[in-house]
Length: 307
Image (cartoon, rainbow, N blue to C red; front, side, top):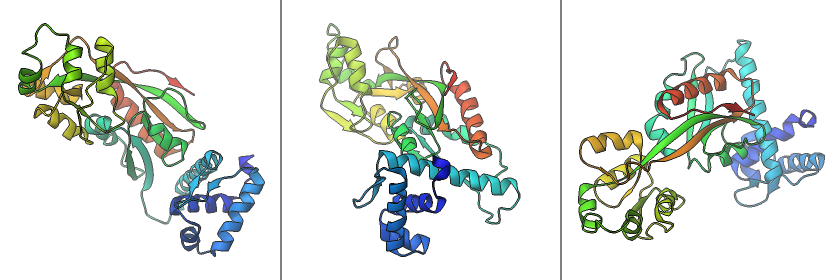
């Protein structure tokens, strides 16, 4: 049982994962490398699992991730307990680590953080990651909460629906005049498949998915990769290619005539979920309340909570 795990061994494992090597963990813990290695081995013997891959940097195995997550949750509860007792002498704000996708970060998520009460003071550590991969950071114990596209709860976490972020296929007037307008009789999917597209990065499949939904084909391999949400929208407005722009970013560009809608009746809605550790943490509860309240006002069709 997790409650029977020696806390010094759990903290040592956590230090090795965070520092990347046994030597660096030994320095951070003011121990010898031999003592660090012995604690990790003892923990592996106690659990009957290999917890670390001895690579450079060291990384946790799937079983190790479970113990690492437990260690981080334990540390969070310990800090909350000290603060609740009024015995926190550090004077430092509570750190809340969150994984969030770039489009949410550029549109609705930062305003949500401004709704978090000033007391107790918090310090946010945001990890930008694709919404299809933010849950991985939760699973590895690197963050306490995440905006994700997965409705399936990571072990030890709860999940609730936030709503849907809407994307609109768009291009600049100059792009449309060059690649689309001269061919009014050809299907839109066929034209887009042959035209340059803008992708966020090599894991961005939205443009390809949109074209497949239109005609069963796929987006052009002639893609530009623009790995910032603001830069992505600007690149499309400047005519580098077409792409799916978050509705909140697309609307002012459409109103200004810098973008044209390519398929107004075919928006793409991506569901978003809030996953968080199952902890009775005042800091995490305050963030969750602010995030879900803001999402309810800004996203489409919020879902229900689940465990």
